[in-house]
Length: 289
Image 1 (spheres, rainbow, N blue to C red):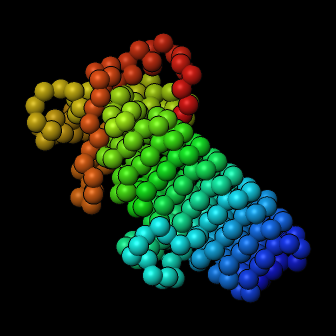
Image 2 (image 1 turned 180 degrees about the horizontal axis):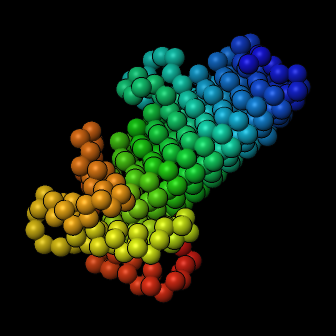
Image 3 (image 1 turned 90 degrees about the vertical axis):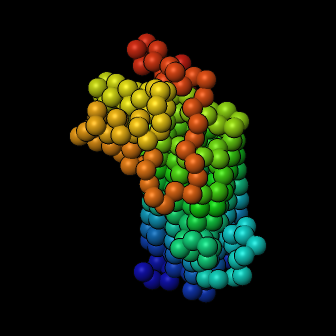
């Protein structure tokens, strides 16, 4: 990539450090600032007053709205200026005042946000996070360092996610939830502290999961989180009963991961229903997903 593609549009008030590379068709609006190790791929747009620093790569067609900042140093007292980085996937949108900090030496040195994500105003992605594709962070969501968010998750406004938490794909986190433990794939959590209240049925239905998929996941969740017996016994029984079911096996693999840093989220008062009436009624009930 050339340092500055001839088709890129750069406002005269923008500050571009020597060494920054700007791809074809990119647009850099007024009062934006780019550091010397920044790479903008083709078609990236920085609307105005955006700041991109560190060893940061912004994927093709991504868009940063006013006052978004990407790749600034992590909020980690152990960080001493090491050359860490940040990656933003193609077509991802960062709305006003979003912050995505670069990695730290405590991780692998890179913070990653996937493709086709929407990070709404004032949301924050801490150092060394891994955010999958097509994730939505609503306004004021806060991800602590080293958080992992699977693809197509939805995190409601003001949700706070503790450091090292893992969130499985297609999970939903309710607004203002305080999450300190791992959330299994396809789960729906809510509250402060957050508790598992069922499946993300609305989101799964919207994304094309079949009724059979939902029935199997619901039965597996009931067995794991509600039925009597020790956790190990319930896990073994679930593995045997749903052998060959790829979605249930995904949940079991997530729960048994050897590298987890947090305990599993606890079921809440609504766990007995696990979304039972929601699926059968065919109604959205106004939930986001």
